[in-house]
Length: 240
Image 1: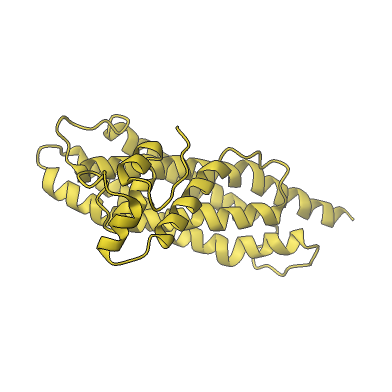
Image 2: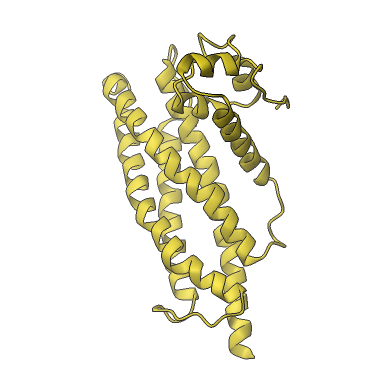
């Protein structure tokens, strides 16, 4: 991926080509990076009635989150991991599920007759969304606060006994989401677009692929890094 510095004078199409995830930011702000791809970011934002600073900040945050995916998190503390998961993966999951839901409905409604697999994909997408809502809440309100207390050397009260108990439940829910993502990938033939796919169709499949990739990173960090660290810290306190 070519690296370019994004400024008010960078053209929308140039940004989208160099950093495809930027399309999500442009869509959220109603910026036309396709037919209007030759317009500079500052000019396009001014025409839409807002300053480019917010868009530039969102682009930088998105680019940083992609860079963070390449970091070696094995040496990070529980607190660092939780903060990263909340700010990057939990936020991204909520934002993308909300953004993709109406797009999923639209594409399935318009193209579902000719591509019936879209209706099944929509069903699995809804199931993922319904499952992840309460899942993220349980982590944020119950599991993560307990882990943060462990990392701070505090004795945290819990309603679940050992931390291994809620972790076991989270692992099972991760497995379910992983299976649903696999079904969507199979049905979409690895997110292959049909000939002549419209912009909404393209945006949906790109979004689903990005959501899958982010959830894979998200689940990996929890299953293979954060959860074992929390169990080890709790065990060490019990043995003392």
